[in-house]
Length: 414
Ligand SMILES: Nc1ncnc2c1ncn2[C@@H]1O[C@H](COP(=O)(O)OP(=O)(O)O)[C@@H](O)[C@H]1O
Ligand SMILES: [Mg+2]
Image 1 (tube, rainbow, N blue to C red):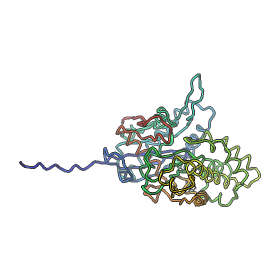
Image 2: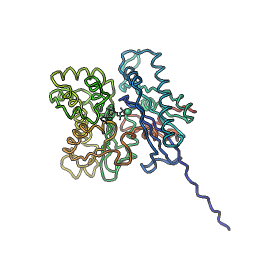
Image 3: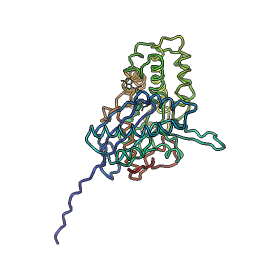
């Protein structure tokens, strides 16, 4: 009997573009990744980053986005127009990135621009309602790019009983989990959020939540007091002194006290918070205000880690819990891995690293692990889109509080 030789099947790769624009409203990040078609994702080695690029919003668009986010009331016509305009800008951004790296995306995952996020259900017209709203018309992106687009990840998650956030822990787990090192993955965007991954953890053991402001308060104050979009490299903060009393006052803000799961946005740390902050800083110099806002980000992250990550007895892996006499000992988390625009603010990083070293935690950067700081969230939405395309769930219920795993997002076909 002659043996039939089977041809070796070369696995095709799917090119996915991830498009992210965060609460900083600084612009659009695009990442192009290649993932073997149909592969079930087990780790970072099945995700190849082909390239990434950032596209700042034109200043009038940034202003319009910030205005819409902060508005008590807004024109419906303007919101509808903004939705289409953002769709055009996202399409342009994907186009330009494809051109730069000479590949065409088979699929796009677009987060959209969050204009409103309220994860607690509150009475509204006779019903209790929670809601999350990302703008940026996916149908326009699909038509212009010529590839299907997955969008609206958060509303699906919320409908499954979760808070709709955070969604990046899915990627954090794939990329950063380790058999022997417990890691805290800390993104510092407009809002700061962490994913705590104990050594050798299963997905159910991940803890993830928003710790509070990232750059949002620093940015708003820098714009107000220095007419600059942000405190580049933390230079202004470095020239000021922290107003300790003001810092202590704002660390008592209710959000910091509430237990995870929890999410934050402009609703908590937007205009109103910033106005209060400025009022209490009256006696300080302008650079002291920025230094104090920077310290608020660093301290609120450190406090959240101390209280909710290290202080959580149940999150200790059994073996290390047995080894130590003090259940809040920190030895099972050895590293914090920073990403997001805030990782470029040297003053913020120095303040945070000092806090971490007192907990025995070493500060590292996402870039060291092959995932550039600026690209991480865009890569995350490429990966979530890939999973959705293959009808697989990608929320992390232990992080969002969802009742069940959910396939995230909606599809717009080209
Ligand atoms: N070189 C830098 N120095 C200090 N801060 C920076 C620098 N680059 C970016 N940032 C900060 O990072 C923010 C953008 O971070 P990003 O991760 O894109 O947040 P988001 O996801 O909210 O859009 C900017 O608004 C700015 O505050
Ligand atoms: Mg951004």
